[in-house]
Figure 1 (cartoon, rainbow, N blue to C red):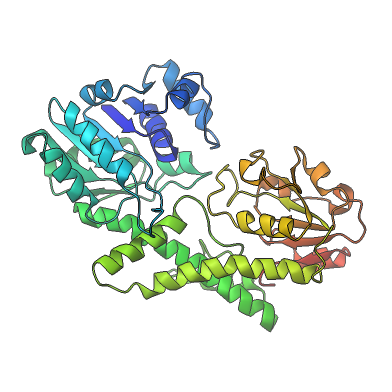
Figure 2 (cartoon, rainbow, N blue to C red):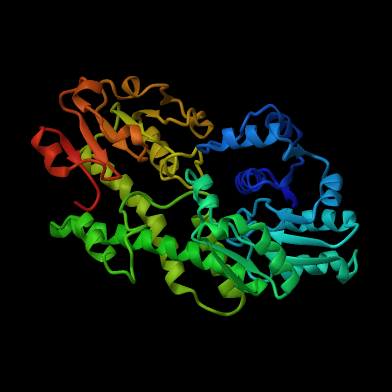
Length: 432
C-alpha cells in the first residue's frame, strides 16, 4: 500500500518506518525542512533503539521517503495518517489541536480521489467529527473517510510494540475502511495481534482511558510505597503479591518518581477537560494528577531529609535524567523539578545520562553534564539513581566514588536493600 504519514515526530517516524518495513511505500512528511534533510542523511532526531537501522534499510530500499511536499505525498497515497503533536494547551489543560486542524485543511485541498484519513495523534473524543466537517467544506463526502487508529508505542520499546502489539484499535463505521486498515495490519495480525474495531469516538476514548488507567496504577503504587516506608513493609512484596491477581497484573506497579513523558501527563489532563465538557466529574483521574504533582514535592523533601537539610555546597550526582530509560525524552521528568531546586539551594549538581547532554539544564550555573559515569560520581556526597538505564544496575559504588561517606538514593529500587546496607552503604530507596 501507499501511505502518507504527516508529522515526523515520535509517532509518525516510528510508525512510518515500521509500515515501510512491512513492505509498504511510505511518505513521511514534515514542514521542518531541517528535519527532513537530517532524515535524508540518516540522522535520527529522536533516541529510539533500533530505529536507525530500520530507517536506513527502508530508505535505501526506496520504500521510505522523507519530504516536505505534502501535496505530492497526499496525491500519491491511499491512506493518510495524521501524526502531528497534540500538546497541552498553554491556556488550559485541554489538548491543543491547532496542528491537527491545520493539517486537515491542507489535506482537503489536495484530495484528488478517495482517501482514508486516519488520526494516529492522540485526540479527544469528537475530534474526528471536527476533522470531517473541515474537509467537507472543501471536498465531497464520497471522496474521503475519517477514521481513528490510536498508537500505543512505549518510548524505548517502540519498535517491538509496533511489531508485536497487544492490540490494534481502529475506529470507523465504514466496512470498506475497516477492511482496508485490517489488510494494512495483516502481517501483525497473523503474528497474534488482536484487531479490535469500534466507532470513531470509541477509538479516541480508548486511547485516553488506557493512559489514564496506567497513570492511575503508577500513582497508586507510589502512594502505597509511602505507606510501606512508614509501616516497615517492602513495596516490592506488595507489588508482586498484588500482581499475581490476574485482574490486577503486575505491570506499572513499580514504585518510583512521578510519571512523565509525552503521554500520561498531557492525556490525563485532557481527558478531565473532556469530562468537564460533558459534565462528568472524573474525580479519580483528577486525584491521580494531583498525586503525581505531589510526588515530585515529596521527592524533594526526601532528598532534604537524606542530607539532613544541608544542601549547600554538596556535590549531588544524578544517574539518568530522562523520565524513563532508552529514550532522550525529558518531558515532565521529575529531574526537571529536582535539579533546579537543588541548584537554587546552592548544591553542585552533576548528571550523566546515556542519551547525552540536556539543554533544559544549560541555564543553571551549578549544573554540569558529564560524558561518563565515573566522572559524574567521583567524590559525590549523594548519588541519585533517577532513571533505570541498564548500565546503572550493577555499579560498584566504592569504585566510582572515592567518598567513603557516600549516600545513595535509589529512586528505582535497582539494588537489594539488605545487600547495600550489609556492604556498608548509606542506602535509601522507595517504599522499603
